[in-house]
Length: 278
Image 1 (cartoon, helix red, strand yellow):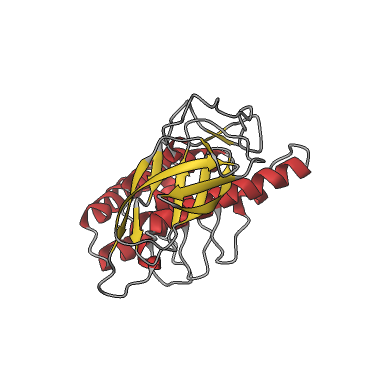
Image 2 (cartoon, rainbow, N blue to C red):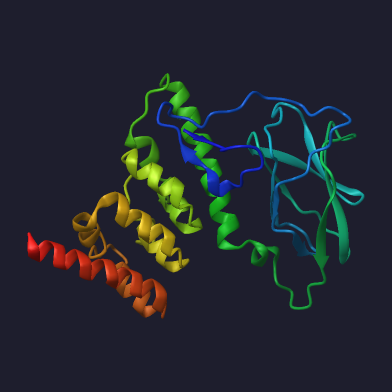
């Protein structure tokens, strides 16, 4: 279903493959001993001294996920867990304040990646490592986990796919569409819409995916949804009042997001003119 569009492509380049129900895993491979990998991205690139932040490391090519990987922060090492063949997740260890070299190894002693800097900061305000976990990191993790889950479901159904896979929620009633809108991955949003994924499904606190796009100021997602759905359908969508009691226009106004509000009102006015003329 989802695949990377070329070496080094970031998570935002994920797109739906119309011929499959799961993301296409490129042939698994191991990098030669003399060919170290430059990580595409690392998020976040710091933590407090106490450690505990979830760190995502993105590789330019798939690795053999059956091999044991570990992440070395200076002299400290922690296990790495693959979410997809190109994304490794680990927990930052506790370290004294300072900048450390983060390197990925397999079998604990064979270096895989070039080193990147990872900083541990002194926590003067006793803020937990949860504060390091930005909404983007949280939703990226959820999104990758959802993709992996859908991949397994589709394989079990021998490649058959339908909207139920994409609309299946997690414990917080978040769907893959919620995650894509929250992060601003408009290409994934467009692909999911074409696959029949719902844009009006509510999470546990009553937010639709479009509400999350408004909350995190992803106007690109709003433009994409309007383009794919068409003005008439989009005008009805932005007037939906879910269980949280607010339309997306009211949410944008209440949170003082003027640019997002302008975008929504622009589409609303165009849609109203369209409806009146037909």
